[in-house]
Length: 242
Ligand SMILES: Nc1ncnc2c1ncn2[C@@H]1O[C@H](COP(=O)(O)OP(=O)(O)OP(=O)(O)O)[C@@H](O)[C@H]1O
Image (tube, rainbow, N blue to C red; front, side, top):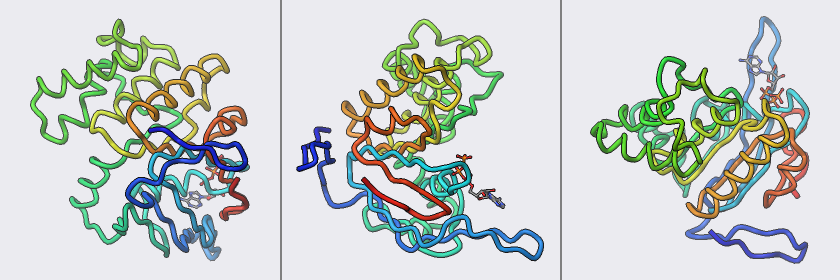
């Protein structure tokens, strides 16, 4: 999806059909013994359709906690997360699973591929869980693995792939259900800089060709600077949005 340039010269995402993600008054606390730990405190954030947002901040700032709640993987203590006006925490069990499946893709630093399955089988897995036929899942997974440049590696298991290749498989797996939003938590955190550049270029290409909304937690300043907006977190709060 094309962007336009605002006065600062930075590319802003097109707002198509309103805001895609609205976070309001998000708080998350854990109780540890007699102590309460406030991990997220009154986080407000809006992310537009097609926007590419970097989330940065020191270790412990709350980035992963925010991503887990954005992805419906964890419940907030209070506050709302809305996708196109739909409050995801009003969805129950199977409804939330179905929402996640059709709207969101996840990529983690430690890709979380299943070691005993091939690249092709790993990518097929979400589609098989969603009860696609094996032939449909296999065809879609092959197409995606070709798109991320792994055509020659379809039958390799994760242990037979490099770190960058494993992350490409994880990206392909995240995309098999054609999500509109890709949440990536330090997708290049474990990779050398050349491999990181390759993953960054791949994410940018997928954003452009699929109109994906990208939310990327990263410690890589170069990667963050290449996205549309940087959200800085500190002590569980949004310190700055630029
Ligand atoms: N289940 C939990 N119980 C108690 N505290 C937790 C729990 N999960 C996270 N925390 C705390 O919440 C804070 C934020 O953690 P989070 O993983 O979100 O930070 P982060 O910004 O992603 O850090 P990093 O960059 O190191 O991954 C940390 O102080 C962490 O110890």
